[in-house]
Image 1 (cartoon, rainbow, N blue to C red):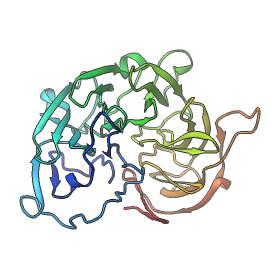
Image 2 (image 1 turned 90 degrees about the vertical axis):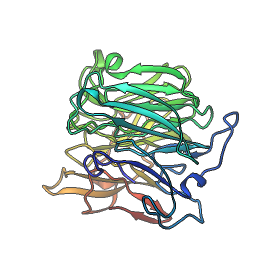
Image 3 (image 1 turned 45 degrees about the vertical axis):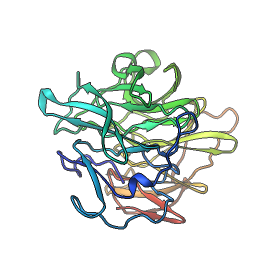
Image 4 (image 1 turned 120 degrees about the vertical axis):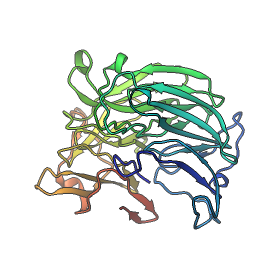
Length: 352
């Protein structure tokens, strides 16, 4: 699974086949919601632990239950008996992005909410490069649109809050339309984007923003990198390490960054690319796995997969983030990928 700038048909169809709707348990929204609630799934590695699934399907034939017409370059998510998808319909001035909620068994539309592209320079209909995320506690669903509207809806489709990231935080848009997916972590919902605002946030940087998931109050903002070369849709991943809740992501400045997910304080960064890192990262034991498709800093070759040590901690009084050098690498190879994220199964990494 991976976001693709160009790899999906511009007029694609979202298809759900037999078995997918059975992968996830039905859950009452009075309890924790279960399912494939986010971009990379429950384990953040792109893998389902479900078994006895069909190994084949055919559009209009075997194991094909229903189809819903929606263009997009992201991925649907599932919460109980609901499918949430972020996509678009129309062309030119009539194009609108939509957050759609469907019945997972029948494909019946339960509700949808449309968003206008009020100000952006996106070309070639590169819209909806991202996906929704569902809060397991409340069942609320969050989405970040291409022009930068960050919105929260209840499971019934009622708008809970809405933020214009462009107006309030100076979020920039780019012709490639890279947006990415939010993540929910505890009481926070976190996104990142290239912004240029006022004061310390004046210079354009790839910044991370954490909001109270229920009230939309800004809890922290973090600037862990340097001047970006392009935008990035790398979706953050999180873990507990050394008693801290840590967030890892690729950035538009070609860094792998580590941030304290509770406070926003940068912990370390490792720059390996001249351009942005779009793929999501993997955590494997004490290592972070990353891949990119831009020019390397230490050669004129394009692309590389690397593994770096995850547990670096700043010493007392040391400036943060700690800037790692090549000695932090455990290994590297010459694989190149600009968009799709690696998948982890046991001790094996799978990558196209």
